[in-house]
Each structure stands twice: as structure tokens, then as C-alpha cells.
Length: 112
Length: 115
Image 1 (cartoon, rainbow over the protein chains, first blue to last red):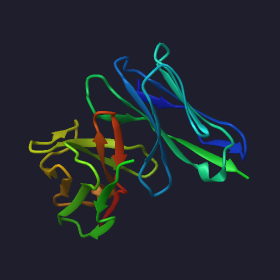
Image 2: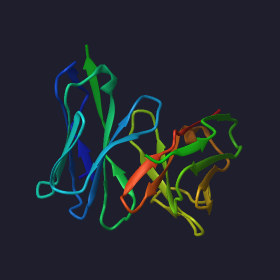
Image 3: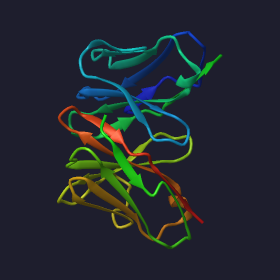
Image 4: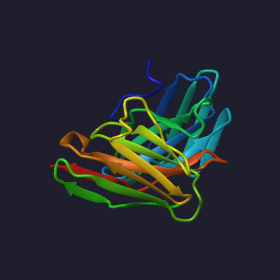
């Protein structure tokens, strides 16, 4: 079982719709969870991080964490073509302070 | 967020040469920096953790004698790919973190092409 698994893509949504990206993880000791966006040929940029169970909202983005289910998700409301990118889920394990383990990424395409 | 720079952004070299990549944290001090490698259409794979003033910690399968890491100061870490070969061609990305919050900020990456 991979440490971090993301829903297989690519995911295509129309402009203005909600895009839902999902991620499960295997390490119950994981404490911090991150969503990064990566445009082609560029390095990842941090969108959001979440530590506590529940929802965390930042503008059009909402991260949801359920530690009991070992599940973290990212919702993008009012999706824009500029949101088209690869989205990477990552966690920091409790035994490896600071190290990020990434999922394989989900390609999102928002079409006009 | 914090700013991390990398230099060079792109390098093309002949097989057998060594290439040095610099990673700098511009507006904060980073006791720990991380080096990742990303092959086309794949996710980021951690290569090593670079600790200021001490030896780097390498991930399983990463040759420490081939990928030399030096973290000489709180704002600079370098990765040297020694005797590079075509299979080392990849996108190398460093990151530095504010460990108090756990966030990591990534440099812009270095595209290495070995001919």
C-alpha cells in the first residue's frame, strides 16, 4: 500500500464548478497534511495545510481532514481555467519530522 | 510565504561531468532543507534531508557519494551531482521549512539534462 494515494485522474470540470480532490494515507502517526499545486515545468506551490480534523477554508479552497478515516480532501469552488494543474497531496509523518511524503498527484483540467 | 531560490534554473552538461545546484532561503534561516527529484509525469521523491552543520540524511536507494550535499550555512545548501549520466537527467527541487509550522517552501527547481 502506498503511503499516500490520490484519486486517479485526470479530472476535468467545467469553469465555475466545484473540483474535488481526494487523498488517503496509511501512516496513522501523520500529523500535518498539505496540498500543493504544480504547473507544468514549475515547482510546487503550497495551497493549504491542515492539522486538525474538520474543514479549513481559504478563499475558494477548502481542505477537509478526517484522521479516523485517514482521509484528506481539497475542494475548489468556482473553478477557473487557471486552476488547471497537477495537485499534490503530502503528509508529514510523526516519526519523520519535517519530511514530506507526496502522493502521485491528480491532474485537474478546468475547461471554459 | 517564505522565498527559496535555486541556481541554476537549467543546466545541460556532458556525461561524466559534475554539476552543482545551489538552494538559498532568502528571507528566513533554514536549519533543514530538503532535496527532491522529479522525473517526467511522476511525483516528487525525497532524495535527502540537509542539516546545517551536519551530514545529510539520504533516503533509501540514493547514493550519497554520487549526490553530495553540503549545508554550510543557515541560508545555503548545495547539491552536487558527481559524474552525471543521462539517467540523472531530472528536475531537482529543494525546499526549506519553517519547522515551527511544518510548512515547506519550494525553490523554483533546476532542470538537469545530461547528454
